[in-house]
Image 1: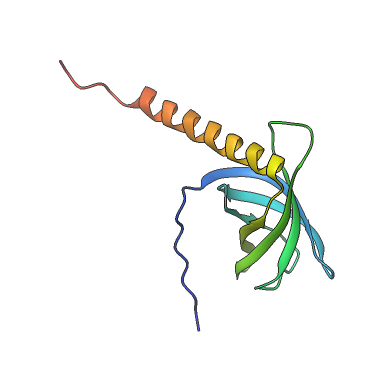
Image 2: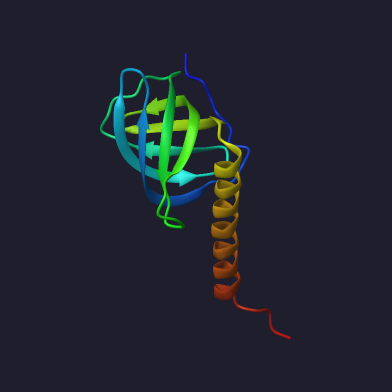
Length: 120
């Protein structure tokens, strides 16, 4: 039976590195979209559905990676994996929220700058 998922929060299209692990799997991948509550990664490492992972997101805002204590695998489609962030330490969560917000503002400003103004 196929489960459907509905995203409740806007996700940013990105291309950042990620490392992940559980008791049986250690892998790396590329985050292809990101929100404060989850992400999609592309990876060559097989990841079972309904698994929980520890993750580190390689974001360009700082040298240090951003730790995600627990991410739940919500779906797997080929080499793409949908993750929901279940547990994120407070400092990392504040950083993640700020990072996503700043990128959303940048995109909004880009859209506004490229939109022709109405004739007066």
